[in-house]
Length: 384
Image (cartoon, rainbow, N blue to C red; front, side, top):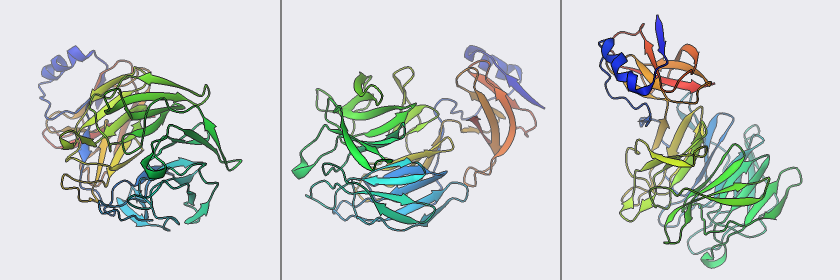
């Protein structure tokens, strides 16, 4: 027997006590990190994107200006990284995005002190091959690259001799051509922040504010070709990574005035608001991030010693580590449908579907009365 209690948050504790159960470590709003995943080749300032349910990491380099053409793909189901056909142009400070089941690598830096690259190359997972496409109108390193509404956008970055640019270029895959759009009104480079699309709107996170901090947020509407200022990120930092999970943008790591940070903050575009969530297991500077199946993956980057790492951490706001209370509290949009899953080992992530439910209140307390009390189980709620 399984019980769904759609109750107000203030009644959740009373419900637990009436059941004579005591919750252990509960991360209902903050989520949990998995750290025992297969490692990627150590590197920083590469780019990541999700294609066909797999996470791809391309390019990157090290603190001595070494650059790599490496392409690797991670399969969450098998927890394995595969080495694939290398990128024709070795580079770091590169941008990447998925469009029409292809991985695009755009711009980048061939080495220390070099000018931005105009190279645009597309990887086809079906043939494990690369093709060269129309180059950027201007060579760019550290552009914010993102796909939205069937196009790819390259935002900001720097060009020759470190000159910051404000341009926004739009790539049309049907015409294999670039066009110029309304420039971003503030300085923005992707190693200073990240560009993420949610529901067709692009968010440039980590723009330079009036105090010279990488903290600003601007939203771009491709249909209106217009930018709008949004609520700034709570923690000023550069070199962070970001991706979207269920409509929320998670920003991880970066470099603050105190050095590399483990800070993770979540931005909700619907409410234009920020919240702090469970930090990374350790500080990371210039990692890469992508999301698949409701899970955020953060990989590579520099550690506090500025050595490149190959660690991979996975975060899901749906994970709930339970010792004595067999279930979870679901926070979400009323009316949405969720599948409730459980597993006994996050390292294996062999999830078993328990039930499907429609959220009639938020939060909703879900109790799995078939589980053995005092046993360690993990639960997740996956929006359908």
